[in-house]
Length: 284
Image (cartoon, rainbow, N blue to C red; front, side, top):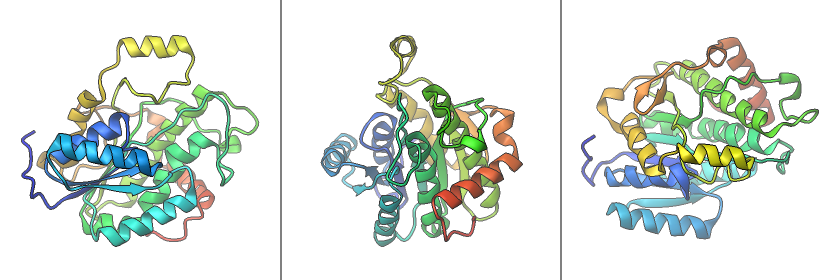
């Protein structure tokens, strides 16, 4: 994709922008000339990433926003800060994700992977819908073709916790959320698509069992390579207006049929809205 001029007026927001795919993508978007905001939990690490991305891309319009997607109060503060900073947001990419080997809960009482990988992105997206509609915008959610089916009777894995199953459930939930978001925003000028980055060398699965870490690392690619295929979906004219799709390496792929079920997606939406106490947003 040909780089946009540094004067490109578009604004992109990347969660999980301090490391891995998020950082590489933020740098690639900045190199394409747009204003890039990165969301970081830690201000010190965030500033290091921000200055490094600006220097590497040659684009000084790289901004830092602090916020923890696993903390609903922090998400509300982040949304308020974004509302003050930008009237319109043209690209929102949810890269932030966690994997935990042992069950843990957040201050809000949510299982950590569910909170970080789904609830936080769900809430933030809904809270900044006005800026996204003003864009118009493209929303991209990094996920995977997970075939794990959600257990709505034990969504927080309180009765039975298996780490890889819980992680897979959060990725399936990301797909359900994305496709439901696309349905609810149809005709609004805001599109929503999911991205499967493939196996990438990041720290996401550092707590996974050693054999799994070793096996995946052997066939993984760099975050920069993964970012290369995401940038066109975020910025290129040929992807304008495309919504409710699932991409890998820049090409559309099939999502597991379960994640395409509007009844399941609607149920997950309602449950997540309740858990996050979402009280605004025309898609609720």
